[in-house]
Length: 474
Image (cartoon, rainbow, N blue to C red; front, side, top):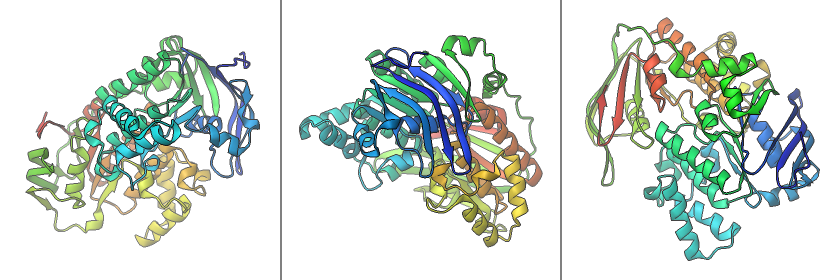
């Protein structure tokens, strides 16, 4: 591999270590104009750490060795101040968590505009015009005046994409750019990334979505346990994978799963009739009916911003509707109605280790630590992760910890909001199998919100499609 490409990015023998040992070992890869690179792999395989090493924002206590050559300069030899000077100017990052990327105190439009105004040096008028174009490109023209808490998770993801596009850097690192997006928006974002490549930008994409990797083309690298186990042209890797893990990754897409057998619903846990929700003049849905009983998984699918999360929040009593009545099983404590958040960082204190948070929760609910260890084994969560902060584990690992956290209080009803949006196909299948087992073992009632129609059809006892001004059962 030639690592002297002056206008390209080349990584040679990159290793990343933490205090408790190596995380990434001897990774070498390259990308150039017209030759994008996509990294595939399971959660915790080291994909995002490779991107963070290139960017120069590895977590505290983690350091990298090797060479990262960009435009003839070894980035690992630069000082932290020199690395930061590149951010938003020559190297841009689309981070995995829009929850952490967006300023909660600023409206969406000004967050995009400040990139044009203060990084690119445009006039105020030109910045506003460019912002509107950026937002329109990701179907967010109507969200310019909204705060992040007023938009859905998928809309937040697109807002972060608009900010990244505004920077117009030579190198764009896109970390899970399509997670939480419905198929149409996923394809739109992927097409936008292809446009960036065609315009001459360097693109490194990290994704668990095989469809995205296939559409982007270029080169694919597959990571497992911190190592690059397969690397080559996208068409060759996807058509004839050589490594066993790559083969398993392709075989685990939801369309290949076995369908769920019909379950007999038990006692109704929560139901609502004639539900309506509007924001100003906009009606999200009206005349919406839903009933969820013990031992069943009911899924809601629909485009981003159609109100899927809002329905779940209304069922939990976190949000009020303008019409309709919500009836919950009166014999159940409110604590037995739990939510698995779409953005896992929302469920964890950022400066508290995962172990401390889980121990506090276990003590609060009278649970034995052994129960947590059993759940961790079933979720394939390693012991070494417990003593890390939430920001020091991968998005997929944090999502699995969030599921564990939601199950600790023995819920009777679980609102799972995009429960597998951050997981690769293999981990996604494992987690959904685990959730189905919990439903069968405990009689848990689940409302699953997802953009993945194939997944919903495979795991659900009933499927509801939401769109337009009302939801319809299909």
